[in-house]
Image (cartoon, rainbow, N blue to C red; front, side):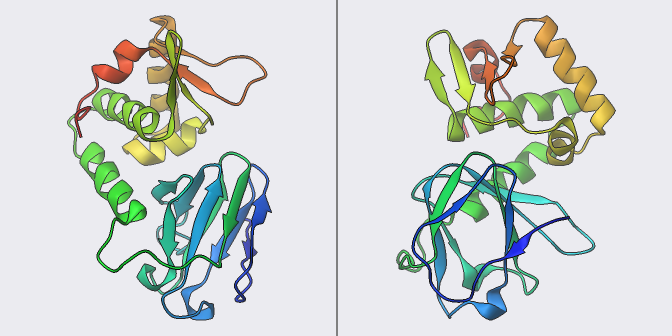
Length: 198
């Protein structure tokens, strides 16, 4: 796993290209500090040896990641789209909304659905509802995840994930535009998902 370390000094806007990852080490950050996403979407995941790569949540513009709420080994932040964030942001009031905790709860709920098909369906819907947008006759997700990563999120193998996504593509409920970084889902797929009201 490749990542760079984030400086311990507060910094103004930091740009990261798609695929780049930084490690946020809470022992190097000032008490009660946070990073705040200004533009783009990021994946937050665990760098610990036992759970290496486990997705904890996603961040979008306005979301904060508080460094005093991280495990001792820290977390990694990966740019899923071009990312702009700051480490100079003042943390929101205590007891406020924590986007990573909310994502972790939603991902845990998905992992407890009975079948891999249900889990995939619920995950795709959740990603579009939280990070995507309606665009004409489709719902666009502005990034793609590998089949291996989707498998990690739903507790399935990459092979099973690929088979299920192929089935959804054949039903014309999902499109992967050539040369584009987005994923398109039919609104019927998003709206009919298990846990869709969550």
